[in-house]
Amino acid sequence: MNRVGIIGGGAAGLMAAYAAAENGAEVTLHEKNEKLGKKIYITGKGRCNLTNDCDEREFFANVVSNPKFLMSSVHRLPPSELMALFTANGLKLKTERGNRVFPVSDKASDVTKCLEAMLRSRGVKILLESEISSLITENGRAIGLKSVDRNLFYDKIIVCTGGISYPSTGSTGDGYRFAREAGHSLTEPCAALTGIDLEGDFTSLAGLTLKNVSVSVFDKDRRVFSDFGELLFTHTGVSGPVVLTASSFINRMHVNGMTFSIDLKPALSPETLDARILSDFRANINKNFANSLGGLLPKSLIPTVIERSGIEPYKKLNAITHAERQKLLSVLKKLDFAITSLRPVEEGIVTAGGVNVREINPATMESRIVKGLYFAGEVIDVDALTGGFNLQTAFSTGYAAGVAAASAE
Image (cartoon, rainbow, N blue to C red; front, side, top):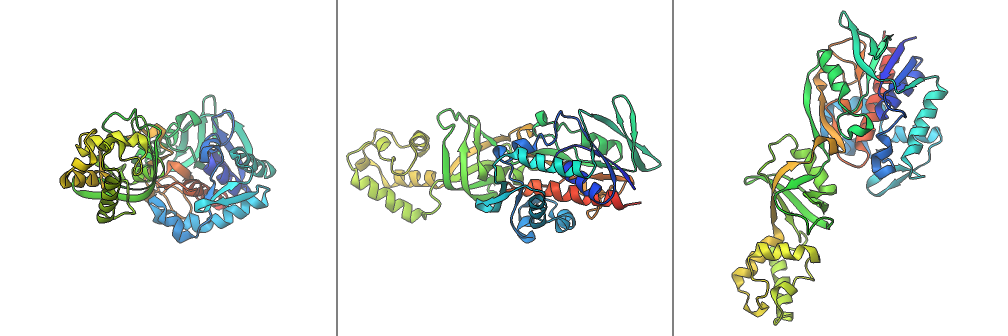
């Protein structure tokens, strides 16, 4: 019987502990916080979007970094089997828009409680407020963990310490240090699924949501990202679903000076939109320009569009020239802002980067450098889009690591 020590009581660590115990290992889980699953509690706005009820092809289409690496672990524990596992252990689930899966109770705490019950029923020893300071290795093999006051010896070690996003949940980069000390290289961690800061004053726009807009990011004249959806203006720039997605595709680039562009009317061709504007102008021919855009735009966005158009706000509509109307049209179809930066990695929903996947066996999650050492979850250089894909990744890699650690010699 292998003695397995697991560092981290988040999604990956809890699933690794379950899988290892289920396969006959003697498992001890070390969690430095006062409770398990601290980051699980804040996922899905406190409801926990624990997976996505999709097939594997669609799943991998939503993985941003290293989808091929995940194929083996996700095939071993795909979304359908994860859902079945939770259901079999008493957690009732529901599927919402976009195939997002939540507990019926809408309480993230119920997911953690279910996992904890699964562990305790299988004899897992759970040590809370148990902070690990380093790994113990000998002759190229992991043999134990060093805590503040003692050494703890195990046959296998699984590192499930998360990334560096939301450090208040305990994700402070410990696993990166453990990996480096063991001889692993890292892909530099950075924010994924985070807001984008733009140049300018957004005081008047903060809180405005735009739905059904098309968003593009340009590096000079090269389009590096494009998508359709919903965004939210913040005090420093933009956030919201389509922006979070954009951030995960541009976070490895030098973003300062790139252009964030919004097509406010993507459903209308330039010709159709021009005809709409001309019709509105003719129907309100004696109005001032500033009072003519209420049918096209949210009130708080009108001053920005007027300023960008260069048209005098109090100019009568019957005096606006064809050239001025074309300038308005171009602003509506391409409202541009200069990007200054992404929000800090601590604010990212997940951390991109982490332990180099080339140094990990994708089938077992075992280190190719140190025998008996495994990695799972966000500490690895894998990240995905919103919709339950990141938690599924944590559960699948944790499961693969747990099974392998229990059965390996």
